[in-house]
View 1 (cartoon, rainbow, N blue to C red):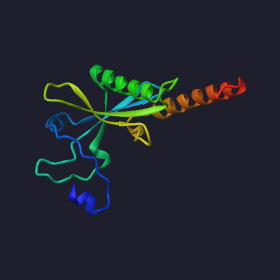
View 2 (view 1 turned 90 degrees about the vertical axis):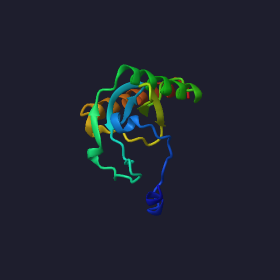
View 3 (view 1 turned 180 degrees about the horizontal axis):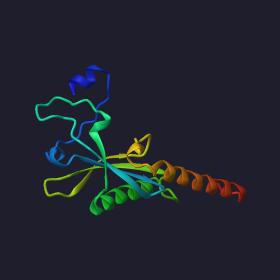
View 4 (view 1 turned 30 degrees about the horizontal axis):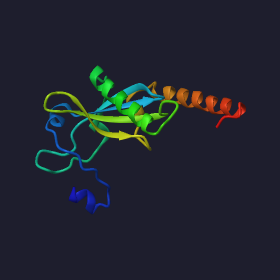
Length: 148
């Protein structure tokens, strides 16, 4: 962490769970409340305490397991409910890790400027564009009907 801070980089402290060394972290990307794709990120904190520099090779495409999808959907639904949104979030990323019992845990919920990891899922850009187009149509229709 000191090395990153010395470089004027930002850090997020998270509890260490050794399952990250074996299973990595799974990031699930959702567009319009619908699961789009997922990636696996390998651990960047090495066992000796040094930090491996993040590279494109640190991430790979993967299919999220059903329990991971359920936890991610619940997290995004809770965020939308907390924000009192009438429709699903336009986008969101949920970063998960498995606990000692193999259950998925939320590490991070990204709702502002998340990395979508689109290079790992070719159709993801099209899915996101479609969700944006639908949302813009809804906004336009509501404005025409005098709703905000």
